[in-house]
Length: 107
Length: 118
Image (cartoon, rainbow over all chains, first blue to last red; front, side):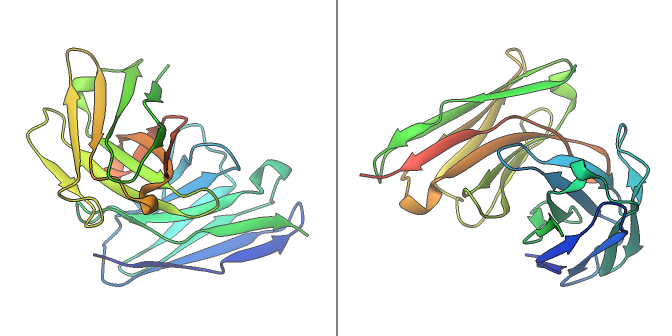
């Protein structure tokens, strides 16, 4: 299986900050990398697919970059509703794997 | 509006069986891959199983292979997960998800809780 490692595991930030979360794959996955947001008690919500494509309806303050093994999710001008846990996921092989999650908390 | 609604969760004893369902609406179910993902409360997401659009291809996580079976009924717009030989470590919220662009999961159900305990 392909292992996905996110960093940091958690971070504290203020409204208006720019936040960057990184995700590293244990082998090259081209651009088959997706990002999800999950709020407590809710199902995950797709933010970014194919490393950098914004899912319909997702605010443009979310952006993704990367290819190969290293990827980033950037949230520009953090809003109160963005405090949540974020997961990366590889879809390069049909044994999908997620990162362990990054919890974004209010400073 | 795309909707996925899971059902069938509950309390089951170790070694027991349970069948989850995921009712789909708002899209042409037979055109999409589907997935099951689980999450231990307070922990991360773990992909469980996938099925292609006509049900001819499936894959499973190592942790459930040989115990769980994914299936679908395109006439009923419903996805299933038959879970046998359940263990305490299978306790989790189970979500169904629709396959989207880039082999992502673009819509998710609200989840159904499976508790394996004596």
